[in-house]
Image 1 (spheres, rainbow, N blue to C red):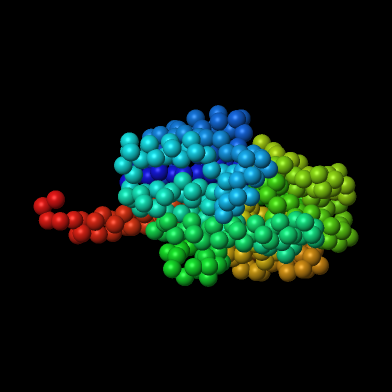
Image 2 (spheres, rainbow, N blue to C red):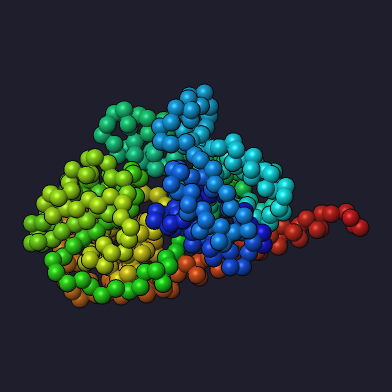
Length: 408
């Protein structure tokens, strides 16, 4: 197969959730297919990483996206049905390049990653068109509107959430298959439009990159990782530190907590160095922090998509304590693979239980690693995805052949 990937970011290095998905998908498809990649980038410093992508691709190119709160996309949003992020991630030069690339190379599949790239597909392309949704952006904005205490943010998030959901529903109609990383998002997309061909695409974890670790010595340490400029992560970390961390410290003497991830907001930075908390910002190797942690926490209140970091923590043998929103969509059971807590009081209790009960913690660790090996190994996940693309292409080719006039 000849596959064109249209990506909202250069997928290397795979530090964030979106990059983890696209990098593992791209390099595994490249083992058996001819792969081309057209990406957006968000800072010139990222362009050097394109050379790593080119190692796997027949062709790879990158084009700049607008920065956050840039005036041109904001102005366009005022006179357009498109939501702000659709304008922010649309580059006319990239659109023209994709059209020229399709004239030069015959693609069997176009794979457009997340709603940011849907505008680069017209729906008229003569190949299989796949739309991969890591989350439903409009749904996240509406959850933010319900969650936020700031009246202005609540109003803006509500209005933009409805615009974005409408845009996503219409964009999905251009594709013959929509893949959702979360089964709950699958259900939501089908409620938006029952005619959409939506299917669950399981996420994965690279088991070679995340071997099963021994437990650390010394005082117990909790860790939460993720890009902190992503508002569900920042809000979850803030609420944990405000509402659960004091109770954790009362229960567990000497306990520490690391919040690890790029671009934390000032409200989160203020906790750095206070009461055993460390807010690191971007780090070179998250694995170094994971090795020092006893418990991995997922304190998210806003759901949607899948938190790939939770899979990495489970693969690494770290006991996990999560909110329901933090682990929704995973084939993981409370008390068997992790602890799930619906309130901050219960969250603190679950952390205490995981720290103090070595036998329960060992059971969670072993069961979680077994689940990752059986179900979430990227090698198994992508083989199934690739085979599905082949079957869909074969069905399309057979339909085209049967509809062609005899002798043509």
